[in-house]
Image (cartoon, rainbow, N blue to C red; front, side, top):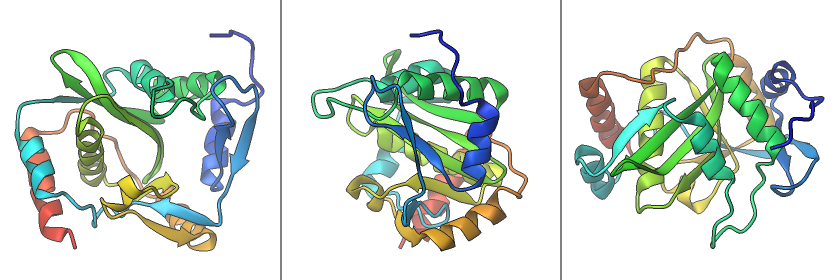
Length: 221
């Protein structure tokens, strides 16, 4: 990884997120970042997250071990890695460096899914006030990223967050209840959320997590 200095700093990145902007690179090797503020924004309502019966069984089981903030560098590197079904990604080295620094400063978090001691899934994102900006997820084992997402939502609910920004909508996210909102609506939601006090809980009580999972089953449409 190049050690050259970048013009974009963690502070500027957080300011951009506060305004509704987020960066993407065209390719993993691209030296240039582009700022996006799409007309329709993906949002995953924290009190509308859909947990299926099969996912609930997985969450209750002992196949996976779930951690948070245990291996942020490994998680973002796995999200950035090329795979057979995704030969190119938008996470370039600058984004990787910036988010790793945000994590060190307490403004970015990861959720990791482990199987037999191997990192097989996870996600990461930035946090500002009561807003969490989901950036990317990966999975090399069935249901690994779904479990990580469910654990993220439970932690955000426990921590007092009010907004989970997914940037765009995919069929995968839509199955969990993600919706699109107009840019103006998103900006209003964002302005309110970033002023809310919240704390990301990396190691919440297991019973509290289970209560959140059960609540999500009840609340799901």
